[in-house]
Image (tube, rainbow over all chains, first blue to last red; front, side, top):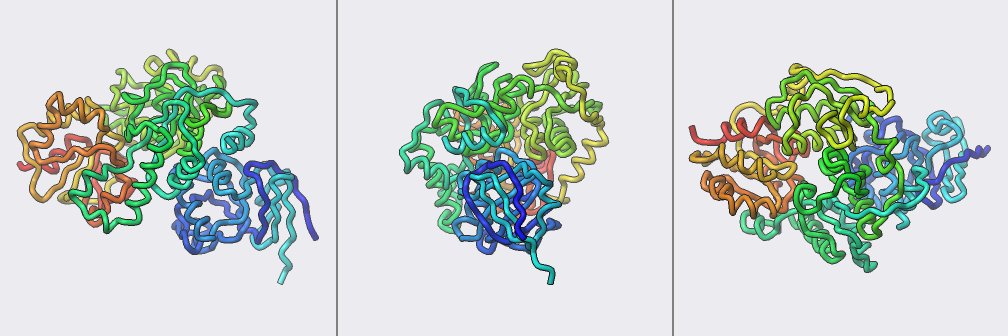
Length: 139
Length: 378
C-alpha cells in the first residue's frame, strides 16, 4: 500500500529508491567516494552505503568546501544518493543539492523519522512536493 | 541564479537584495572546481569585487617539493585557481581579505564565506552577511544579489546565548581557546560575550572568529561596548531572552588546551598563520625570532597573504624571520597537498583549526611564544 506525504521542495527533481534512515547528521566528505560507504566513526550509518538510496537524515554538517567535495565525488563515481529528505535544512546542503541536481525536500507533514523506515521504497517528487512510500514487506 | 533562488525559497526569503562585495572561500578541491568550472565554461564573470581564499603558491612549492607526486590534488588546485582568474575574481588568495583586499563598510550587505570572515564582517565591522558556502558566495559575486533572509534582516542579528568570560585572556592564543570552547558548546547561535575588559586586538578577534565558526556554526557574536552593533548587553539581546548562559573560566580553557594536544616531546615542524597572519602578528613573530636560530631538525613556516608579506618585507619583518631560518609562505592554505610530506611528523601550531585539519601526525598547540621556544636553538 502506498502512503503519500506532502513536503516542501528545496532542490528540484525526482528520485526514488530504498530508504536509508540516519538519526545522525551527515557530512558527505566522510563517505567513500567510489563505493558510497559511510566511513565516519561511530556514525549510525557507518559501513552502510548511500549509493542509490533515498537518504533520510536530520541535517547536513561541516563546511561548504568538504560537503560539496564529498557529494561531487560521489556523483562522478555514480555513487550518490537518488534523493534526500531532511528535517532541518541548512544553506550549505541546499547549495550542494542544487548544484549536484539531487532532489532535496524538507518540512514533511509527518515526522520523517516516524513515517519512513530503512528499507521502505520511497519516491521523492520535489517539484510536486510529494513523498510516496511503500512499506517494506515483513519477511 | 537557480542556486540562489533555491536557497531563498528554502528559507522563505521574500526577495533578492543587492550585495556589493563577495568573498569566495576557494579551497582548490574537487567540489570547488566543479562549480567554478561550470561558471567559467558558461561564460560567467564577477559583477562585484569578489576575493578568493588561499589555495597554494605553486611557483614556491615546486622548488621545494615534488609536485608530480601529488599530481591529482595539485592539478585540481591548479585548474581551480585558473578558473577563478578566468571569471574575474580578485586573486587575493587570502583568508583575511577583510583587513586589506576587500573591506566591507558598516551596514553594507555582502556575501562572505570563510570561517573567520563571516563572523568578522558581521560582528567587528557590522556589515551583513549570511554564513555562505563557497558556491553561494561566488554566485552572489557573479549575480550581485543574494536572497534576503537570516542575518540580512536586523531582527535575526540579536544575541541568543550569554557567555560570561571569567578566564584570563592573556594573549591572542587564549582567544583561540575561547572560540574553540564557545563554538563547540553553542553549536549554532549568536553569543553575547561579557567580562572581556579590554578591546580585543585584531588578531584576537580573528582567532575568536575562526574558532567559533569552525567548532560550531557561529556566524556572528556581540561583545557589548566593542563590536559594531551593541553598546550594551540589553542592546545586544534586543529584547531576546538568552536561550542559555555559559561561564568560561581558566579551567575550561585549560581543558580545551588539553583536548587539543596529541603529542609530547620534540617537534619536527611548526606551522603558523591559519588564518593568515596579519601585519601585527608578523611584527610579533619577528620580535620573537630576532637573533635566534631555528634548530636544524625543525622546519618552521608562517603563512600570510601576499599583501601582508609585501608590507612586512618593506618594514623588515620578513628579513628577520628568514634570517632565523623560518619560511614565509603566501597564497597557501594549510589544508593543501603541499604539506602532505608532513603527515608523519610531530607538528606544532598556534591554531587549533590548523591542528584540526590533521595535515601532520601528532600535534602540539600553543601560543606563538611557545611555538618559537619549542623550535629555536637554546
